[in-house]
Image 1 (spheres, rainbow over the protein chains, first blue to last red):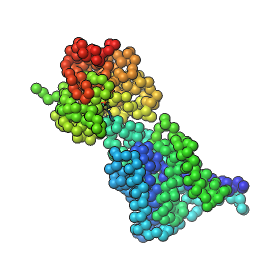
Image 2: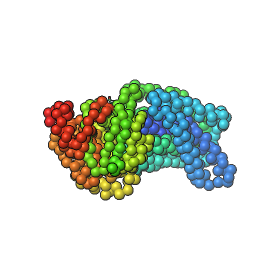
Image 3: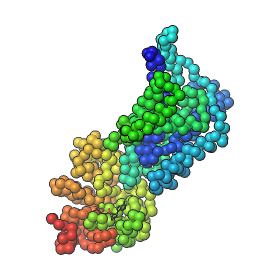
Image 4: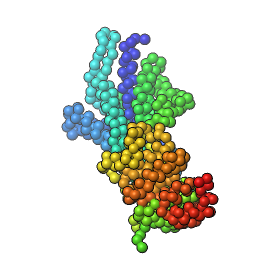
Length: 305
Length: 238
Ligand SMILES: Nc1ncnc2c1ncn2[C@@H]1O[C@H](COP(=O)(O)OP(=O)(O)OP(=O)(O)O)[C@@H](O)[C@H]1O
Ligand SMILES: [Mg+2]
């Protein structure tokens, strides 16, 4: 094995992993606060990919030619609209079932996932969609055949993910809002008795998760350039795997799980078999659920959210 | 006659088919210390929790300051001046002591949090020493102090406590009841639920006896303390 291939794969894996981590935040926070797996979260991410493409097209049409400004507008719009989706899904599909059985919101989530896929397929067509390449510069290290290259976009993806995670961690651990989120997660009824509007906190959790998924959606769409209405399923399951791997309910666990999954998937596809890389992630999920369902950081005492 | 601070009027409460409260009526006047005593499963916790809408009552009314609050959303009630120190303390285990206290200040919008913190640290100096410790790692007595301190953070008019002496050593119970006396002297109205009636009846101006979800007896603290039936039922070993 050549060292530069290994390093290249680690860089690719880190890129992929930080994106999984961003999406995993949505699964883990929602699970932490209402104990349900939001199966529609992957499709919220998928919606954000479409919003990215639409925003880029619209803003370009209106003559925004500076690429940083175009991307900034795209990120803001995509985050805003995706958050509305996340918020609305909770209001419409989960909140009315809050006090029923544990199974009901899960089934509702699967329904919501199908609704989103079909709605996007009808509205946007089943074809692959794409966005133009906006950032194509690369760093190249090494010479001749032995080189490693890092695209600017990879650097952007990794740094935006890291900054987002740091800001989120700060919000959760240092702000009044974050304290209320943690209280709601640890004892929802008691938080309510102390004056916390727990319904609003739950809404905010969905908004935060969707916003993180939207950031991931913009980044991945720029990275791969193409997507379809089905990307939410595969990416969603992988991000869910990341959340479970890190310990579902744990915020640092989501990021750690994402990075471990990204790295191992990348190494697997380059050194074992590319065609089976999705199967690899699913097998990993099954193995964790069997042998270590609490994940790496998810011991019962661990602080969640 | 002035209107009571809290006026509970014929309330019933159910958990599915189980009726936990059967048309309970009681009242608490401003400045009083009222005790509610009853055996396991009598409905004491249900009574206190139903004031906050868990469970919602299915008959009767709960008037606070002459306003019916039985349909008020849970999170609005604390802001009206009620605070609950619940059964089992229910501190947030993964938060620090200071964060737990700040949660208690939610109804007053975290304003003047520092002054409120100081007041609570004066009541329980130990909490100040432990302010950075995770609440889940506190001893039972320390958690109880924290739960009471958290309740005081919203500067309540009416403090409701559910078995604050449960599982604590006699010396700690003594300390906690002394603090409750101090809190009452500072002008807070107190409603205290206890299974172990000895301390509660000594502290209380008035008391109610709850049996099977129903008020069976009422009187001043000393009257009930002297009642042989009460002594037999609730003061065993005291
Ligand atoms: N969440 C619940 N679901 C079903 N039944 C409940 C629930 N909580 C309480 N009950 C029932 O309601 C009745 C009253 O319970 P409650 O907890 O109010 O009693 P208590 O007087 O506080 O008892 P203790 O002294 O043991 O705390 C009991 O029969 C109990 O089994
Ligand atoms: Mg009780």
